[in-house]
Image (tube, rainbow, N blue to C red; front, top):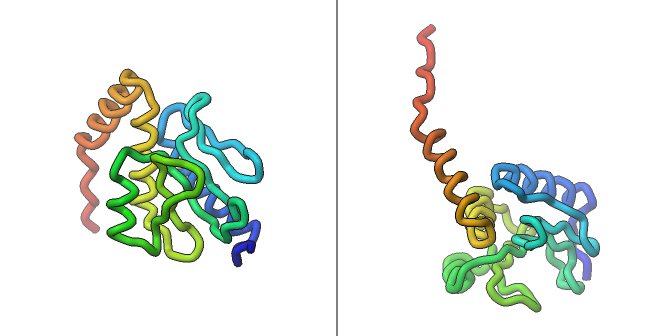
Length: 142
Protein backbone atom coordinates (compact mmCIF):
# COMPACT_ATOMS: atom_id res chain seq x y z
CA UNK A 1 0.00 0.00 0.00
CA UNK A 2 1.51 3.31 -1.04
CA UNK A 3 1.29 6.27 1.31
CA UNK A 4 -0.55 9.51 0.78
CA UNK A 5 2.53 11.50 -0.19
CA UNK A 6 3.39 12.95 -3.58
CA UNK A 7 6.64 13.07 -5.54
CA UNK A 8 6.88 16.70 -4.39
CA UNK A 9 6.73 15.51 -0.74
CA UNK A 10 9.56 13.07 -1.40
CA UNK A 11 11.67 15.79 -3.06
CA UNK A 12 10.96 18.25 -0.23
CA UNK A 13 12.08 15.70 2.37
CA UNK A 14 15.10 14.74 0.27
CA UNK A 15 16.09 18.41 0.11
CA UNK A 16 15.71 18.86 3.87
CA UNK A 17 17.83 15.76 4.57
CA UNK A 18 20.48 16.90 2.09
CA UNK A 19 20.61 20.23 3.98
CA UNK A 20 21.15 18.36 7.25
CA UNK A 21 23.95 16.14 5.94
CA UNK A 22 25.67 19.02 4.13
CA UNK A 23 27.50 19.84 7.39
CA UNK A 24 28.81 16.27 7.69
CA UNK A 25 32.11 15.91 5.82
CA UNK A 26 32.10 13.41 2.98
CA UNK A 27 28.39 12.55 3.04
CA UNK A 28 26.62 12.42 -0.30
CA UNK A 29 23.06 11.57 -1.32
CA UNK A 30 22.46 9.19 -4.20
CA UNK A 31 19.41 7.59 -5.72
CA UNK A 32 19.46 3.88 -5.05
CA UNK A 33 16.80 1.28 -5.86
CA UNK A 34 13.94 3.82 -5.73
CA UNK A 35 15.14 5.27 -2.43
CA UNK A 36 17.74 7.87 -1.51
CA UNK A 37 20.90 6.64 0.20
CA UNK A 38 23.13 8.88 2.32
CA UNK A 39 26.67 7.60 1.99
CA UNK A 40 30.05 8.23 3.58
CA UNK A 41 32.38 6.74 1.02
CA UNK A 42 30.97 3.27 0.43
CA UNK A 43 29.31 3.12 3.84
CA UNK A 44 25.60 3.82 4.13
CA UNK A 45 24.58 5.91 7.14
CA UNK A 46 20.93 6.47 6.24
CA UNK A 47 18.18 5.86 3.71
CA UNK A 48 15.15 7.91 2.78
CA UNK A 49 12.80 5.00 2.18
CA UNK A 50 9.75 5.38 -0.06
CA UNK A 51 7.15 2.65 0.59
CA UNK A 52 9.90 0.15 1.37
CA UNK A 53 8.60 -3.33 0.47
CA UNK A 54 5.07 -1.90 0.51
CA UNK A 55 5.19 -0.74 4.15
CA UNK A 56 3.23 2.45 3.31
CA UNK A 57 5.85 4.69 4.92
CA UNK A 58 7.88 7.66 3.83
CA UNK A 59 10.63 7.40 6.40
CA UNK A 60 14.29 7.74 7.26
CA UNK A 61 16.21 4.65 8.28
CA UNK A 62 19.42 5.65 10.06
CA UNK A 63 22.32 3.70 11.59
CA UNK A 64 22.32 3.91 15.39
CA UNK A 65 24.28 2.60 18.37
CA UNK A 66 22.96 -0.26 20.52
CA UNK A 67 20.02 0.77 22.68
CA UNK A 68 19.11 3.88 20.67
CA UNK A 69 16.10 2.28 18.96
CA UNK A 70 14.60 1.07 22.23
CA UNK A 71 15.08 4.49 23.85
CA UNK A 72 13.39 6.28 20.96
CA UNK A 73 10.57 3.73 20.67
CA UNK A 74 9.80 4.15 24.36
CA UNK A 75 9.88 7.95 24.11
CA UNK A 76 7.76 8.32 20.94
CA UNK A 77 6.39 5.16 19.26
CA UNK A 78 4.41 7.23 16.72
CA UNK A 79 7.56 8.87 15.39
CA UNK A 80 10.08 5.99 15.61
CA UNK A 81 9.85 2.37 14.49
CA UNK A 82 11.89 -0.80 14.11
CA UNK A 83 12.91 -1.01 10.45
CA UNK A 84 12.49 -4.32 8.66
CA UNK A 85 15.50 -6.36 7.57
CA UNK A 86 18.23 -4.45 9.46
CA UNK A 87 19.60 -4.44 13.00
CA UNK A 88 21.29 -1.47 14.58
CA UNK A 89 19.14 1.03 12.69
CA UNK A 90 16.29 3.36 13.70
CA UNK A 91 13.24 4.11 11.57
CA UNK A 92 11.96 7.69 11.67
CA UNK A 93 8.51 8.45 10.27
CA UNK A 94 8.71 11.60 8.14
CA UNK A 95 5.26 11.89 6.62
CA UNK A 96 2.49 10.86 9.01
CA UNK A 97 3.94 12.89 11.90
CA UNK A 98 5.68 16.26 11.98
CA UNK A 99 9.42 15.50 11.89
CA UNK A 100 11.58 16.80 14.72
CA UNK A 101 14.35 18.08 12.44
CA UNK A 102 16.75 18.79 15.31
CA UNK A 103 16.43 15.15 16.39
CA UNK A 104 16.78 13.91 12.79
CA UNK A 105 19.93 16.02 12.41
CA UNK A 106 21.32 14.61 15.67
CA UNK A 107 20.60 11.06 14.51
CA UNK A 108 22.35 11.70 11.19
CA UNK A 109 25.37 13.21 12.95
CA UNK A 110 25.49 10.27 15.36
CA UNK A 111 25.44 7.82 12.42
CA UNK A 112 28.19 9.81 10.70
CA UNK A 113 30.33 9.67 13.86
CA UNK A 114 29.92 5.89 13.93
CA UNK A 115 31.28 5.57 10.39
CA UNK A 116 33.76 8.45 10.02
CA UNK A 117 37.45 8.13 10.77
CA UNK A 118 38.75 9.34 14.13
CA UNK A 119 40.67 12.06 12.26
CA UNK A 120 37.52 13.29 10.49
CA UNK A 121 35.56 13.36 13.75
CA UNK A 122 38.37 15.27 15.52
CA UNK A 123 38.55 17.83 12.69
CA UNK A 124 34.75 18.22 12.70
CA UNK A 125 34.70 18.71 16.48
CA UNK A 126 37.57 21.22 16.36
CA UNK A 127 35.82 23.19 13.61
CA UNK A 128 32.53 23.25 15.52
CA UNK A 129 34.23 24.18 18.81
CA UNK A 130 35.79 27.18 17.05
CA UNK A 131 32.44 28.19 15.53
CA UNK A 132 30.59 27.73 18.81
CA UNK A 133 33.10 29.89 20.72
CA UNK A 134 33.07 32.73 18.19
CA UNK A 135 30.96 35.56 19.60
CA UNK A 136 28.07 36.73 17.49
CA UNK A 137 27.89 40.45 16.75
CA UNK A 138 25.48 42.35 18.97
CA UNK A 139 22.41 43.75 17.32
CA UNK A 140 22.71 47.46 16.62
CA UNK A 141 20.48 49.81 18.52
CA UNK A 142 18.05 51.79 16.30
